[in-house]
Length: 340
Image (cartoon, rainbow, N blue to C red; front, side):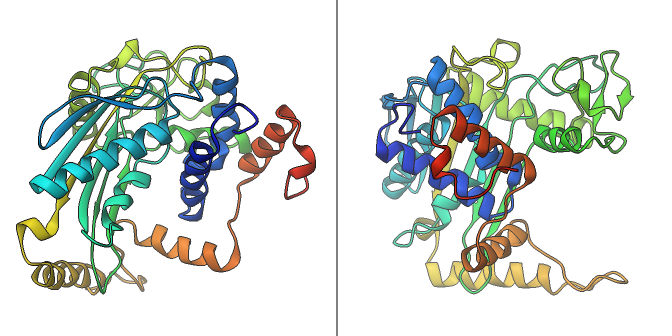
C-alpha cells in the first residue's frame, strides 16, 4: 500500500484490519482482497491520500465525507466519531458517504467493545453494489448489505454478530468457483431468477438469494436506508462494483452506532447481567451429538486466540493474491512465503 502511495499510518491501519480479519477466521474479507484494493489505489478508484472529513454534526450524530478513502480508513474514522459522540451523549451515530468496500463489518464493532476506559455496544453496516435478488424478482436488485453488532462482556467472550443479508457472502461463492465445486442448493439464482449451483455465473448474470427470503430482504432495505439514503451515498444500482470498476469510487455508504453502556446503567450490574445471558446460551441443553453451543462471534474469538499463538492460516486464494500483489508492486523478494 505504501508502494502505491498511501501514507504509512493509513497503510498500517488498513493492514491491521485485514490481518485481524484473517486471524478471526473471516477469510473472505481479509488479506484476500488486498490485491484488488491496491489495484483501485493505482487506478484512481481509491484516493490514497484522502482524509475523511466530518461535514455536518450535532451532539450525538455526524455525517462524514470519506473523500474516496480506502474503506478501512473511512470506517475506522466513522466508528471513532460515533464512539466520541456516545462518550458525551450516551449514544452516537455517524454516517459515511463516498467510501469504498470496508471489509468485515465486525472490524469496527469490536472497536466499541474493546474501548477499555468506556466499553460500548457497537453497530456497523454498509450498502453494497447490487448482488442479491429480492423475493419474486429476477436478477440482482439490492446489495447483500452487511450488518454487525458487538456487545461487551467481562467473564464471557463478547457477542459479535457479522452477517450479510444474503444466504451466504459472495466471497464464499467465489471460493467454490476457485475450487471448481458446485454450490449448495439455494445460494444463487440465474438470469431468470431460478435456482442454480453454478458459481461461475455469480458476477455475470447470477444473484445471491436473501437469507430466509423476506427477512433478509427487509433487513437489507434497512441497511440501504441508513447507510445509503441517510448517509447521502449512492444506492442500489447506482453503486459501482469495486470488483469490476477500478478507476472510480464505488461510493458505498456506511453507518456506525455506539452506545455507552456505563451511561445507561452501572457497569458492574451490566456485566453481571450480560455474562449471565451469555452463560445461559453456552450452557443450554445440547442436542444429541453436540458438545458445545456458541454465542455469535465466539468461534472467531477462539480463532484469534489460536492465530496469536500459532500464526495466521491463509487460504490458497489469499496466498495466490498476495503473491500476485507482490509481483504487481515489485516486492516479490519481501513475500514471506513461497508463491503457491
